[in-house]
Length: 301
Ligand code: A3P
Image (cartoon, rainbow, N blue to C red; front, side, top):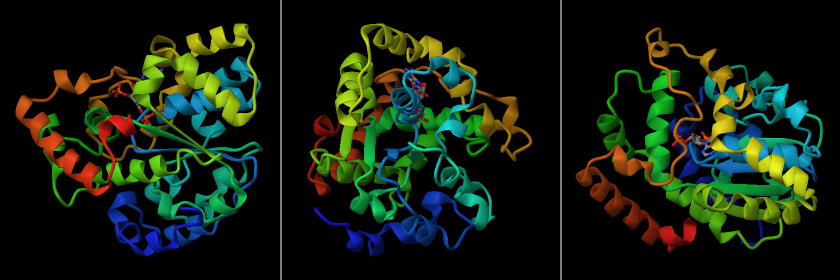
């Protein structure tokens, strides 16, 4: 599509209040109408797809590889999560403040689908970076994250995973979410990649991002980026482990089981966690969604 897909707004997404668990009624309109700046960079993903990894990388590219600054401030303050305050709180007036008060160039994280992102994204042509991840890995990752922050308290992985495959469940919509951005991958303002590609060749992804953002890094900076962004370094980095989220945990028992946010970082790690039957059922349902979106998993990855 060459123009903003207003038709999609009416389609499915706005009815899916659950998608955002948002108590704020004006939430879709406020975001749809918000101001976008020309030099914004937006990181859009489905949850648990390597968002934080990509955010840390982009923040460093946008800030002259200032590792000291990165290490001295929590990532969510450097790169806020657009809809977080709408999801967790009801104060609509405050909800967009973290983004509005951010110095330029702003790096903004969102899990919203294309249709619910600000209309100005299409007019201003701010940059959008999309990261896809095999949904089975993303869902398993989401289970452990959800246990930690209380959403999945008391659920087994099996129960949670079966819920992901439930016909009414929004989790399968991760395919539509990605397919819409995949269609736009050749637009000059869109860079589409995957967790799997980042694992396979992070250097190549960094080089492509440098081109996309019109940035250069020296070989020395590249070496340091690769080390800083490695799984081992990010696992022990307090600014990239979502410690801030624990402050919002409401369930009194949730904090009894805490998984590190940067947890196992594997491609196809789901194979060690799910039964063959679950995997086959997931594959069938994912395949159906892929077909209705005219895209293959191989393409999206
Ligand atoms: P796992 O739970 O499978 O380990 P998001 O930021 O979108 O919530 O994604 C979180 C997932 O990205 C987690 O997956 C986390 O471990 C993984 N991740 C974060 N940083 C990573 C890194 N440097 N290398 C590999 N995986 C990383």
